[in-house]
Length: 293
Image (cartoon, rainbow, N blue to C red; front, side, top):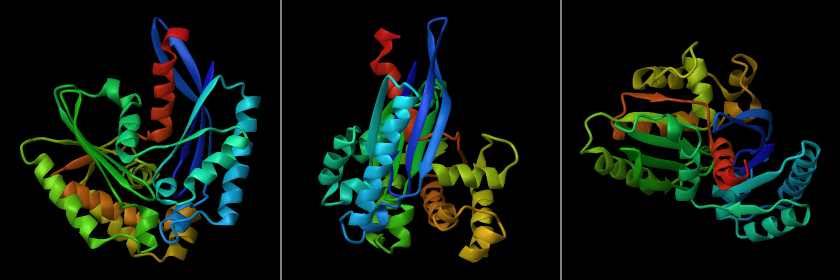
């Protein structure tokens, strides 16, 4: 059995096709195919508050291709979720309607739902219920922060701070201050907090900072990596450091957001377990279909 997750972000659109494994009453999944298309819907949504015709057409073509691939792979269930860019676009509903006509139903989800879906990935079962965790997901248009204690969500908030939004100079100083104050208040009563970072940028920063996967990154190490990357021009981050074109620019504002969250959320370290919204969607589909498995 195969499920598929479509993550429609502000920077890229992803399709994850996963094989569902049932063994000894335990249900898990293996990633079969992962495709990433850098549509950058946020460039339109955060400046014009509208998805332009070229990107509208590219989005529909991408969804048509994803629908064909899901059919070829014999996917039995799927879920497509759109986040910040589609939330901000005045014609987001029109995009959803056009994509439905090519066979893909899209849900535009809010920040709290996004955070809960991410947590619903395998992390929810793996984390120590006696610890306090601060989840930070940095996307192209927004940053979702959630505090979990004793296995329960204590509070969650979405901020209009994202990599594409910052690059397009659409972030506001008031939003930065709001996030800092909220973090201070949220974490002040907890002595030890474990940081969990999700998203493509923190995954890349973690790989650049350590040879070992899933190793905690200290604030000092992340700051050093940020300064190192910032010392190169965009062109040299691509040609000298070998970063992909659509990663080389967004990784700088992403590091700025993570450093701010770590400082005001009192995180000594942060771990990047290389999961994201697509993984959480697959787990959500597993939970939905448990009786059928």
